[in-house]
Each structure stands twice: as C-alpha cells, then as structure tokens.
Image (cartoon, rainbow, N blue to C red; front, side):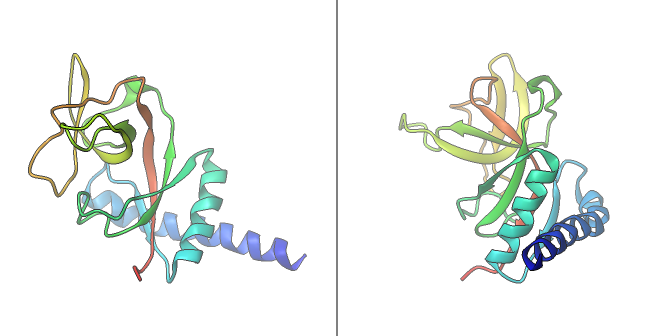
Length: 156
C-alpha cells in the first residue's frame, strides 16, 4: 500500500509539474516540448517513466552533448511518441537513427530539430549547431518519434 501511494504521488507530481510548466514552455516556442526540472536524477526518471506510461510514449536519455542548448543542458530524460510521419512540422524535436558524422557510416539515436523538408526527408539540426546535417535526412524508415516532454535534473 505504501508503494502504491508513493507511485500515485510521483505520477501526480509528474503530471502536475508538467502542466504547471506548460504555460512557460509554450511562451518560448510552440514546438518546444514541456519541460520540468527535478532535484535529482532518480526523481526525474520516476516522473518521466510515469509520464511515458500515461501518454503511451517511450523514454530516452539524451547524450549530454551541447548540440541542443539552451533547451537541453547535459543529460535529460525525453518522452517521445510515434506520430504520423506526415504530421511532422518545422521546429519539431525528433528522435531518429542518424549519422552524427558525414564521414562515418555508424548510426546513433539522435534528438535534433526538424529544419526543412525536401524530397529526401527532413533536414535536421541541433539548436546550438551552426550547420544542418545535410548528409542525412529523417525519413519514415529512421524516424523514432517526436519529443513531447523533457525531464531535467542537476548534472553530477
């Protein structure tokens, strides 16, 4: 019973925090997901997991690079949902399998912003990058989902 009360409290905390920050998030950019900041990584993980379950989404932990600053600092939990590829619009945050380096064939899971759609797919870029990833595109084959919420925590 104690565990159930704690889980219910965490779910309510996650939803309450996200809804209370939704107004602030929408004033920055309508395509930025709602973002909540937690006291530690454990609290952020519990809230993100609960929110992912509630929304039918999945959870990833960002790599901690500087490419998405100032929106994302360090490692952050992101909840993503798989939406119809045709519903993607410019400035959406997408998660996809891509090549971070044009000179290498290795792919990684990447979270960046949709910049431009052309006949090859979506051109992507990190908010803090001076370039777009012209060597790759997000297509129906490598699109993993759209970010709907971010759960940040202090970095060690």
